[in-house]
View 1 (tube, helix red, strand yellow):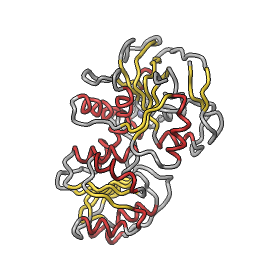
View 2 (cartoon, protein in one colour; view 1 turned 30 degrees about the vertical axis):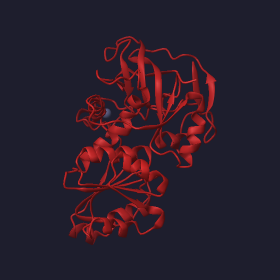
View 3 (cartoon, helix red, strand yellow; view 1 turned 90 degrees about the horizontal axis):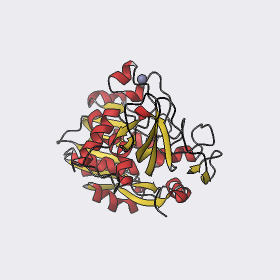
Amino acid sequence: MKAMLLKAPNTPLTLEDVPDPEPGPGEAVARVLACGAGLTVHHARAGRLKLDLPRILGHEIAGEIVATGAGVTDVKRGDGVTAYFYLSCGACRWCRVNRETLCDNFGGYVGREIDGGYAEYIKLPARSFIAIPEGLDWRKFPAEAGVICDAIATPLKVTRKARLAPTDTVAVFGAGGGLGVHMLAVARWAHARKVIAVDLMASKFEACVKAGADATVDASEGRVTEQLMELTGGKGIDVAIDFVSSAATLEAAIAALGKGGRIVTLGGHGGTFTASAGAMLRKEIEVLGSRYASRQEVIESLELVARGELAPMVSEKVPLAEAEAIHERLGNGVVTGRAALMMDMR
Ligand SMILES: [Zn+2]
């Protein structure tokens, strides 16, 4: 099969012929129709994560099961599927309560510890595949179906974690990115009173407004906290969702929180930031971390899209062979929304 390989850290992905994967016991193989390309994948391409190489990256797939190994009952030939990104055990106390992202026996990620979806076929533990429900035309819209498992599921979890209510004003930091635009749309869907997009690149604001933002804050002008205060009549925001999670964004976001404010951090490189314990106490501020989504939230995201409640937004579609060009654009921060690789596009 054809696959895009990462052969050495931070080098261009190259198109290669590799053996077709064969399913072992408990495994299944899907023909990949499309695979999303986002910043999470780009961190691996850019050498910011330790990987065994060569590796096939990518996890936001839509595909069709073509072969199953011994003992597989989760999926069968012909099923339309997407993938659960985390390799969780399914048996520990965290997995049992739908908090697989805290799995005690965490095995890593699809497209990092095992080969992913930048290829014509993908082999995974059968339980890592999730069936795409009736009513979602994955053959016609494989890119859109593929990105749901992360781009919609991750924001859906955030709305629950932050207890997003219809009376809340929400600010999304890094709003122009793939997860950011979907977060704006999901916050809108959750009936937030006001959704504010914060980004460094004003060129992304048109897409942010289209996705559901009521207002935009150009972070390149500085004064982010002050701009958010002006937009809320001095009250401050109720929920800050930070996909950038640098010290600067976290500190600006926390300073802009009003009474009862919540901040959710999802990105960044694990740095530290400073917050006022006094303000935290007086305003009863909550600082929350959120990683990806539960398997159940992926299933619910697929159902919400199938019902027409939410729509994934794929802004750029390119053939598999052009993966490197998309990653160059991801690295430069110029992709607005989500990009996807199409296996049948020539
Ligand atoms: Zn587990």
